[in-house]
Image (cartoon, rainbow, N blue to C red; front, side, top):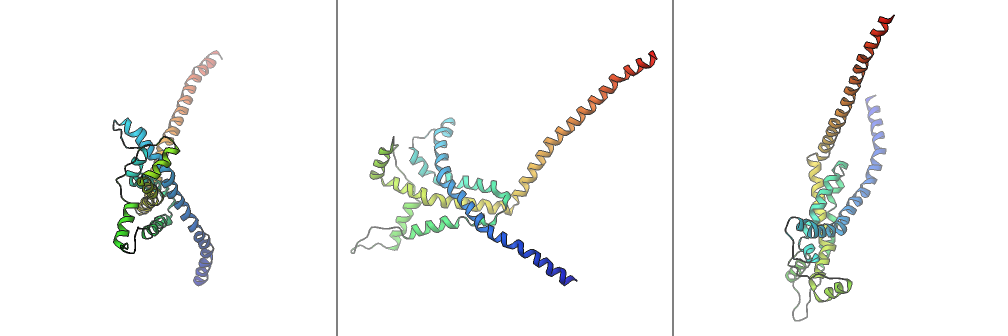
Length: 244
């Protein structure tokens, strides 16, 4: 009997394993889409808001141009929003989120090792010079960029200043890498410490305290109204008894 029940349990567990495995790639690409959305849209918006609204309101305006400020603080504007987004998504408990950094890391690694370095027959490029040039292209700071008023100024700036090409390369390839690292690290950390369960418990406790107090107040009001109604009806009953 025990063997039969064990076999039945195994046959019942097998159908549930298939859909779970099929969902893993979908979940992975959804988390990856969040990472690239942050790198492509959230990073420029957060940089513009910080430069145009936050710093002036704090009395710390910057003289850097919009692009120079964005490229110079790319790590913070990529890593922090992705880290926060992964903490928000911790309640889903998707372990595939731990590995979303691998895709932007692989793309950046490919761009890194295939980065073209000027060379000639008399002065061939060495591996060290290629690594240094690629590092400068995808990780180095020190941007010096002026503001532009329209697209004509922008394309003129692109043709005259190599820093903007370097900055755009970092936006396209380095920012997703930073965001992927922050997202995966936060997803791993949240599941290790049980952040999702703690957050759910906190929300339930807050809702219970808020709505529980409201319900108790409603019950108290009802009891008060009932008691006052009984007090109001008592004299009327006594008057009716006296008349009779």
